[in-house]
Length: 318
Image (cartoon, rainbow, N blue to C red):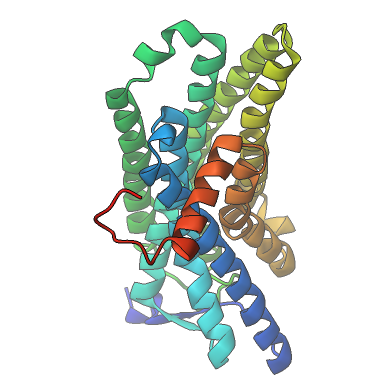
């Protein structure tokens, strides 16, 4: 096999060839990235520092924020640098690393969203068993399983994808290294093994999705039977944001990885990638905190502590 089958670098898709629009893209992505850093950073700090939030729901939310930070950091800074310096290249090792890290966070997020649905199901449908079912050890094991599944899936897909000979050049129709785009560069029939892995992943993802849907069916049935309108409102306020995040993330990600090649257009692929890799990490903190009073109070305390209590003696409890 010739060395040309394994290029030393890849060419990423630029958002525009016009310098002014490249600066506009840089500024837009910079704003989104800073918003994601601020929002997820505040949630992580609030959950870690406020003992009132040391519950399974907020523990999983902390992990989701970590995953979101990893997801957007894997793709957006490189895209911003390319726009700022008017370049398109990414090294072979850099591309493999980007794909590996993105696969970890993508799989871990899907797994964690499923776990969060189960957590809400137990809390609402079996409240008397919640304390024993979702104890601290179980929650840690669930979170570890989500991260572990991400690492395992990433190792399989990255090793398999980058073992394929690439005979169709080195230009990717995407602003970051993505499995479907690299498969387009592979030789005829050489990508079938990776397609098989994607199908297996899709089957597992479908099983999680079915479990998630069934969980929410049971949740909504229980909520509608609640006698208190205030109780129904509080429950919906914690469940509907999670459902909105799941729908946005899953619909765009699944369509990207399973859509037929015949409807693969650069503009469509670009839009879908932004919707499932850039938008969720930026809007998740807003969605989860919008109607969550406990989280808003904790975040407000953290902000006030940063801006108004920095002069206090760190060894005092005032």
